[in-house]
Each structure stands twice: as C-alpha cells, then as structure tokens.
Length: 448
Figure 1 (spheres, one colour):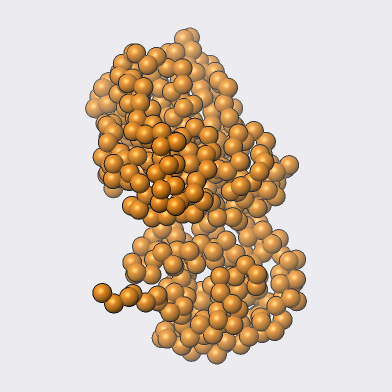
Figure 2 (figure 1 turned 90 degrees about the vertical axis):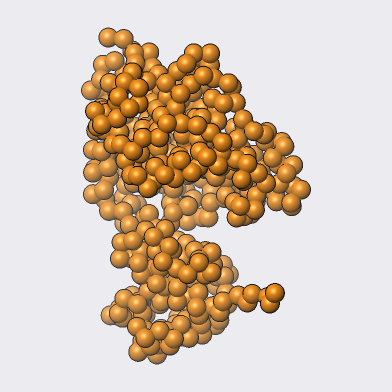
C-alpha cells in the first residue's frame, strides 16, 4: 500500500481556524472538532487546544497589529497563526513556516482570499517587531494569563493564595490518566503490560496511572477487555469517598444521580465487583444520547448498572423505576462551570460567562434538595463538582447544611485545585501532584 502523506500545514491551519471561529462564536471545541474531517482531526485538535491556551495573547497581539479586525474567517486565521507563533521557543513550527503557510491558507479559501495580503502584512510585521509587540501585550492581564478578566477576579477572591498557580496549571496540557479496573487486573500487572509496548506510566494514588505520553485508547493493552477507563485522578476519588466504610455484605442501593458519560458509575460498579459486594447501582441521565454512552462504557468494561433516562431533580419521574426505596448512598456529580478541567478543555474559559455561576449554583441547589429525601437515614451523599469556584463548592454546601438540620458534613477533601503534570508539590488541601480541579463534600444523613 502507498505510504499516506501528512496533510500540508496550510490545510491544518485552515481547519484549525475554522474550529477556532466556531468556538469564538459559542460552540464547544468538541462540536467544532466533530465538523473537522476525520483524517485531520487529531492534528487539528492539538493545534486548536494550543491556540485556545494562547487565545488571550493572540487577541492582544491582533489588536496591536490592526486597529480594526478583519472579517471573522480572516480574524480566526490570524489569531490561530499568532497563537502558534508568538513564543518562538515553544512554537510547534518555525515562525517563517507558520507565516508562509497561514498566507497560503488564506489564499486557498474564498472567504479569506481577499484578506491574504492583510494577513501577510500583519504576520510579517509581527516577525519584525516580535519583542516589542510581545512586551506591549504583557501589559494586558488577559493576554498574560490567557483567562477572561472576570475569571481572574473570581480566582483572586476564592483562592487568594493560589490563584496564580491555578492559572499556570490551566495553561498546561494535562496528562492522559487511566483508572485501572481492580476487578480485572492490578496496577503492577498493567504497568508491565504498558512497559512491554514501551509506554511509560507513573502512579498517582489509588488505581490511577498517568501515561508519560498520550496514546490512542484502542492501542492500549486490554481496551476491549475493559482493563481500564480514561479518568482524571481527581475524578477517581469519588467512588472511594462514597463507598469506603459501607457494609460490603449488605445488599445496598447506590445511585449516581448525574451519571453521563458513566466514568463514576463504572468505578462504583467496579469497586463493588472487586469486593464481591451485593450492591445494586442505578445511574440517572437526563439526556438520552448521553445515557447511551453510559451503556456503551459499562458494556466495554464488563460491568452492570441500571441506567434510567430521567431528570434527577424530578424524583417522581424515576422513583418507582429505580425501586421505590431510599438509597444507602448517592453520588451527585452536579452540572457546573467545569472551571476545574480547563487543562483538558481549554475552550471552557472562553465559553463561560460570569452569570453562568449563579445559574448553575441554583441548579445544584435544586438537585441537592431533591435528592436528599431519596437518601435513607444513616446514608451518605457525596456532592462533587469539577469546579474551583467556591459558589459551586464550599459555599453551596454551607447553604445546604443551613437548610437541612439532618445533614452532617463528614471529613472531605473540599476544593482540590488543579496542578500540572510533574508539579512536584501540592496546593492547599490537594493530596496528589497531578490532577484537575474538583470539589468534594461527603454528607451524612442523621435521624431527626
């Protein structure tokens, strides 16, 4: 068979700019990449994520280069090139290659052909005046941090001692982290399987392994057999926090209230299977398509759970189908701003608005209050979000405790702040040195 040639850089830049324009217009990076041709998608994703991590800087440079921005397609291509080129040492391509290929990309597209000269002039000037332009952009805090101004204000208020390190972590690329299925293998055995195919990995605590270099999941040992799932180390803390101390001999009822895509449901089911605990697991998901993903993940992992398509905040919709009896333990991984997973989803910071925090906090309140009556006295509810904002974490829990006299907060991690790979240290109450941002509160229901 003839060797497949890599696509030219101009083609990758064209596709990356199209995806970036979609994100700027309000689409998620996931949906923007779904519109990218499959053959280009892996490379375009890498370039898009790089550009999104530098978008604040690129916008500042573009404003310095042109008083009036060009049309949206040309602006997206200019921003892409500037984001990739501004740091000469870290850039994935040489500056002159990026400029020539960005101009070629402009010439190849009808929507940008008329602005090819403008893009060429801007980028050539950038190469001539790089030092002065980058220094000028440093005066813009949004450019320096690559975070919206309102996001920075929130971080300063919520984490005054650590906000700068959170920003630093957010601008790094997260490692690919696996949760090894303890019902099927061990950490040592799986590391040996990785070593056999020359993939390095290091332990992060529990059953978490971080790969030294990301790889397609289908090419990893035991993918089809369900030996592992991809799951950040912070997210892997949910199941142990909820389940440790429960009676492994009793037929307990467990609920994952907002379950898609099913990573935590699978972890709960795997935990029970490894210990031969006769527990039943129910997973709720309001979106039917996302619920189908839970089924798919459980099937690959060889695990079982009842999956119901229903709104967790409306127990009347699903209570009888779920057995009609109170649960012994409930996991509520509530919808949130996702402000803790910016390392993995660099588009989040540019898509969110400050008003989203109050709206999502209100939704979290409704879910907590609706699910609390579904828990038996003596049971426990683990509330978590992948957010670093206190309105979605300890402030939410403090308000809940004030409303419910039968709730008691058990020892919990609280806010886990994101730290980059190989950080070599911890932030605040973090227990590991490589994970996303998360919040955990374990609530015990007392008898009134």
